[in-house]
Length: 602
Image (cartoon, rainbow, N blue to C red):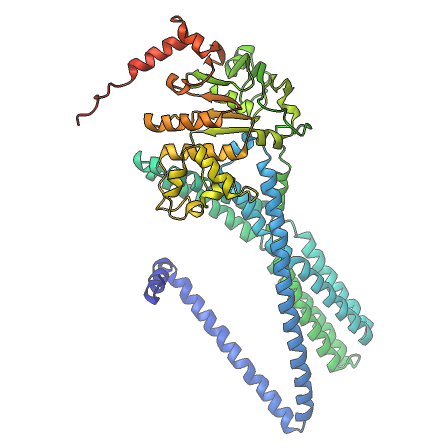
């Protein structure tokens, strides 16, 4: 639907209602500017008519023809430079974005956890976008000003060396002022970008949690906090744009003073007969010609200060280093893999970690895993049970090398996981959590993760192995169906099985299921377990769960309690022992389940 004129009028009326006074002043200024622009040609016409009456029409026609030719050449070269400059800008800024994204994706989860996605988007895209004008304009404008200044000085040197020297000293003074102020506003623009990142991060977080905010009555607090962040951004913007734009008025003042002094000197010279009136006009024309490049450079210096803040932030981000050092081994051992944790102790780095005043008791209390050792034989599946906070997910993160243990080591076929290249670990170890992430793209792209090397036959085979072929046949466009479309509603079971299909296409050696069935109803959980059984064929697996029934098909069981092993052994053996903790947990879980008819009423 296209907006009508009434919609535009209403939009302007609503948002400009509080600016009536300023709009009136603006209208008067525009009226005066227009009147001056209309009247100026009238004055020029009088001069032309006077010269024509004196028989100078042929001279005027010749000059006008040359003037039009030169003006056309300037416009053509200006347009070509703009096109090329814009192309250069896109190429350069996209390279910056690519470097920032590649670098950020290589950082450890601790860094990502400290920076909301909205803030990171502002740093990666916003900062790079702000550099577009710097890439496309600044160097070209600087080159154009340098060429123009050189040409004018050469022309004046031919006319009169004194004029050349005076204009040279004038240009040096203005240039020195520009260089002196080139970084004055950088800190203010840097703080403004930080405030913008905070605002974007806040908005992104609240939009992701909009249902919870509405349900829990957090709208008022959200609006208050957002207003506070906007206020902070406005304050930083005022400082940045008031202090960061001092270059232009200062340059104008210096240009005005310099122009007045030079014209006064030229006037005295002309009156004394040491300079012709034409030479005086030539000097005035060249000063006027220089005024616009210097004014333009003053604006570019303001952009440079903005770019300076962006460059500082980009360098700061690129200077971040991952806590995970890359290994050197290029390939994993042949599967099925043997994995082990050898005397592993781990704690997440809290704020203030490493304080020398920490007691051994405080350090021990922060540990998530305590001197933990276990093995998973090749081709077997380990089920891990335990209360929230017992260390189950931490084991999954260590096996996927999202973190490294403080002591001990995690091994695959006896090789420390830290010795492998990180890209190899990411390719050979697959993790599926209860939070399945899909992109606004086709089913094909979501399953292949945009890898064009995976053909449709492989995708369809993976879906068939996980009993999703009927589901695919029901989609309107097959693999070309957009997964984020409103007509495609995924159940929790379908989403988890699609996540497993994505893993199956990767063909990993080790598969980790971290609470993948935690939010599923019994029927959906059964479907996912069937799909998981197919996925784990010939692979080593780890299944993390809260409920004992979720690990009914694993080979071995590990029960954690406070980051320590409470029980570990073959599942059948533990079930056969009535004194085992697994037997106890299973009995408690069965007693807690509602009877088939419970809750039917109401």
